[in-house]
Image 1 (cartoon, rainbow, N blue to C red):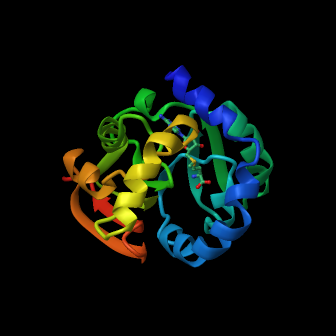
Image 2: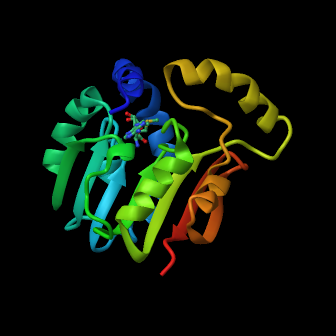
Amino acid sequence: MDLETQRKWDGAVAGYDLMNGFGPERRWAPWKRRLFSAMDGNILFLAIGTGQDIQFFPPGQHITAIDISPRMLEQARPRADRYDGALELRHLDVHDLDYPDATFDQVFTSCTFCSVPRPVDGLRRLARVLKPGGTIGMFEHTGSRFFPFGLMLDLMTPLTRRFGPELNRDTPANVQRAGFVNLSVEPVYLDVVKIIRARRPG
Ligand SMILES: C[S@@+](CC[C@H](N)C(=O)[O-])C[C@H]1O[C@@H](n2cnc3c(N)ncnc32)[C@H](O)[C@@H]1O
């Protein structure tokens, strides 16, 4: 368990829902609902945070949702309890996934690979527990190719990484580096917020 990362995200709980809840969640709701509407089979969700994404999960699914921060999970618990389906919360670092190979049909992430400290390694761990041909669906903010957004995100990242995410990552490239195939990238907002889909080979 990466205790430094755990402490960072435990520390981000206060005010998290206030900052991310109302505005962003309302803005992104249709996109997230559409991404998660593809949920089917045995699903791994990384990382659940305070559970704001649960409202967008289709009912009746079988989902294991993990997070490195026990304090985030504490906040997520009441939302998980209200979910109309099977939703298990686990305190787990993506780098320490203890599931057998090829356990899950699908993996979903939401604003996560700006935060996982070693993203390519984290993505490889996810690929291991996905069945061959299994899919990953991601809602992620990333760096941007467009001026001035890319530059602004580069300048902000040294500050934001101290208490939260890195804003300038090239997550689509990281997904490919981790060995996923059939990459598709759907722009949600400028070149900054994206839906990324890919598949484990096989
Ligand atoms: C920006 S928050 C996003 C939370 C939630 N998905 C949302 O959209 O509100 C990033 C989350 O990633 C989790 N996280 C960071 N590194 C992790 C790791 N190595 N393993 C599991 N979870 C991790 C943090 O604890 C935090 O809850």
